[in-house]
Image (cartoon, rainbow, N blue to C red; front, side, top):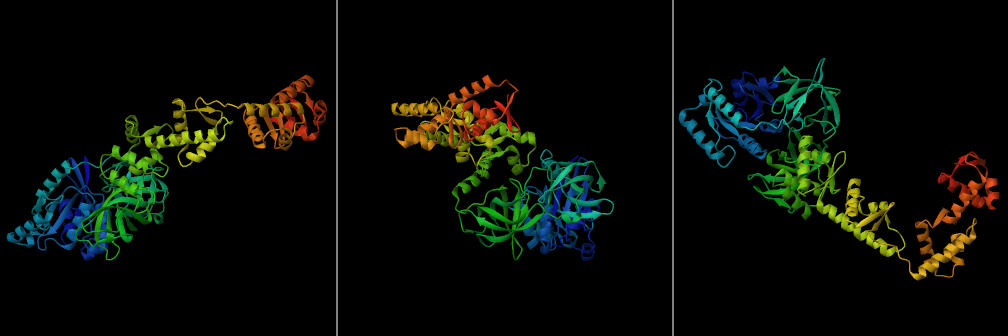
Length: 632
């Protein structure tokens, strides 16, 4: 069976609830106050089975005071029944509801002329003509206009037939997308606990499933499900669903939260959008406060227009919305804005980036990126989303937190983009995505940094990997750092020398003067034997420029010709190897010896003995046991 949601729209007292009751036999006005006053205050629900189609009805309030409740229901509908009373024709809330449906991207519906039993045929014809003229150029331009009377039943059977045909021709909600159920009601039932209801806009939900509420980050387990008052183990997109949640208190719930899959989505307080202002709205000034509606959520927000100070009536612009409270939105979600006071609908649009960085209104790069996100297919927009991230990269999971696609589908799309060269996809538990231009820029900067290091440090092998990472790659994921360097090694641009990075094919060349200094340092340290001179003594003992001595000295340390045991204790590597040989000649493996025996063996003081023994321990040549050593 196909499941779809129809929403009523129209002015107060134009017969919306009576029409739903005539179609379904269910009174959608559930509140006692609604039944006493004869008006819909909050959302009402009913359903109609038409064989192979089940239509759920969301009956929304028509009174201008309750338009925010209307918005909480109409955001999840597949098509609309625009109800217009024959005795009053088009009224202010009729037009506001119609504008809201249009701004939210509702693309199909039926115009119902209600209360035809109250007018003569001539008046009915005039109303139909006025409605036809008003719908010209809109999504309801070619919609059926069906006169009915909920009191006498006239036209109801025809309306059911038209609803069936419209439902069959309307694409179903995406059941293969991830779970999203915006909450429009929350209450508690004795013996069961917290229950939330909403329209399942995408995906499916099952009994015993773990879910998360966003915003809020609360997790719970689905204790039970109802669809149209019947218990079910599973509900799918397009169904009105009641969910009994285990582990959540009613006081933690509020309209605007979304039931979804755990550990993927993040709430946001900043949105980049395309915003359209209604033709009869007043000009919208930069940074004005408005009421933002998306799904069942209402929150105050400021509108930061991009590239302009004022948005004129009927115009469209790109803007950043800065919300007073967190919201859960995805790329391409529709939204509505209303004036802060008086609370009238003034515009709406589409969310282009659900979690952007905060940027200036004059940021041309952001403006260009938003134009790209506003056109083309999803595959063309994904590289733009990646490129706008502050890290210049994101994992597949982070990308999907903006899109809400099934895991296999987002992975397939990204793999296809990587094969086409549009993005770079780096293997990881959640693969890392970046742009080829980002990789090229980072590699170019790496090559320049390594080259500059060599010019400044002619006698060093190369720059350390850690220094490169901090200088160039500190703001990108570590996987990109490894990928960029490994690809440069493959192309023979650089080589790894231990923990250093050097230009490919570069060899350290000492000048004749450098060779003389090296020989003098080596001779001095060798001749000192087991009690070598400190650095300051060494510089004074060698007849050469002090800076040259220091430069060659540190090069010899890098090349491990000299071995540094402490700040003032440097040994020649051959001397240390000679000492190891003498220790092996004196002590058998496993033999213990103390500091005194070690000092006597080499004729040295404790000043030299302790650092030497600690060095041998680090080399795992000896092992310390208390105050003694054991030859390993």
